[in-house]
Image (cartoon, rainbow, N blue to C red; front, side, top):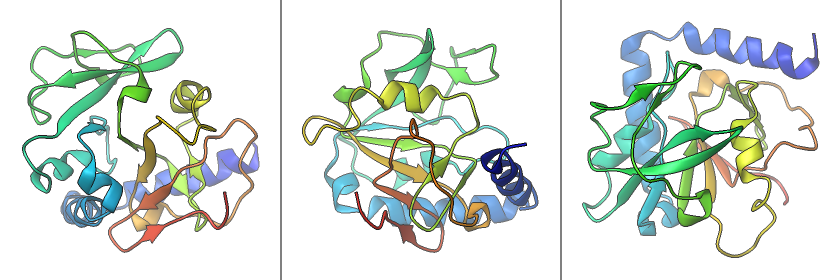
Amino acid sequence: MSAIATLRRQALGARRTLSPEETNLAGQQAARRLARLPRVARARRIGLYWPLASEADPRWLTHRLTDDVAYFFPRVAADTLVFVPVTDPLDRRGWQQSALGVFEPPGRSRPVEALDVLVMPLAGFDVDANRIGLGGGFYDKTLAAIAGRSYRRPHFYGLAFEAQRVARFTPQPWDIALDAVITERTVYRPVTR
């Protein structure tokens, strides 16, 4: 088993030990911290995800921002993601569950570069805001073409629980760098980019 796979298993195991009450409270605290980031507070188009299992719930963010924000959720298209605007980010009626078990909204999609901010799930992270995904590579593949841009790309934020923090690791060459990872306790930023 690779070092990253071991860290992923460790982080997911730690996340599963949190009670529903702990994940609910920590998720709200992380969303409050995320909403205070200047780029998020100014954003008008924000990509979220529908949480699976014990993932941090980014939908708490919708209670913290103004009403003129449009929310988008991912849908798999081939091996990448497209983003669909939704009217009510708390209601998944009419959504379909994909073969991967992810709920996806119907409707016309937009490319990721249409967003101002993209909030991503993660399995684990380190103090340098390096992200360990669930292993499918959908976010990395989707963001690969725009990650190096200094213009017209969303800011990438990981949302997690402090329990998911693992030892420092070296990201893989294909791993997309995050602008920050936000937990209930703090904001982790990369040392250098």
